[in-house]
Image 1 (spheres, rainbow, N blue to C red):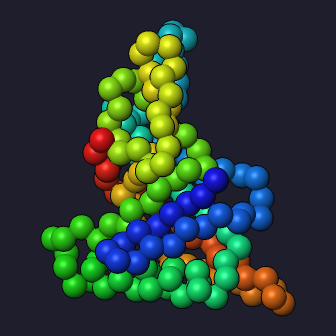
Image 2: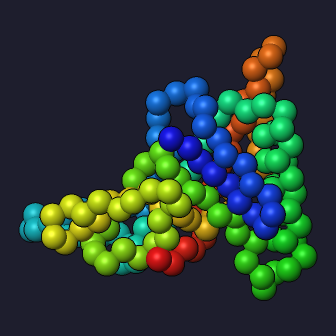
Length: 159
């Protein structure tokens, strides 16, 4: 299980996490139900495919801390200086599989394989383009260092 971040020639892989919570969640607003004055249920929510957000807590060493800092710096530099060029970080999530209808629409994590679910769906570890939602937050507790990272999906990495 890992989260890998890639931007240009910079790459870091996080493999040690302090808790068992999987970091990926759907960005609000969620689908839901409302009711008419007659009690009829009415489906509400976005009509587009949901995007994801990651809240990653990980143990890091000094080298990983430096790489994360450099990736954030490069992301922020691109975001500020090249507004028409995507300032996206590639996030490869091998913590939690992604499920969808066949055919697969996202790039698969290298070294992994997709698994069909029946004849109509597929499950696989996917790649995502993301933005930092906030700067990395590092904590040091004696010899132990942790980082808190928050990302939001910006676009698909096509299959």
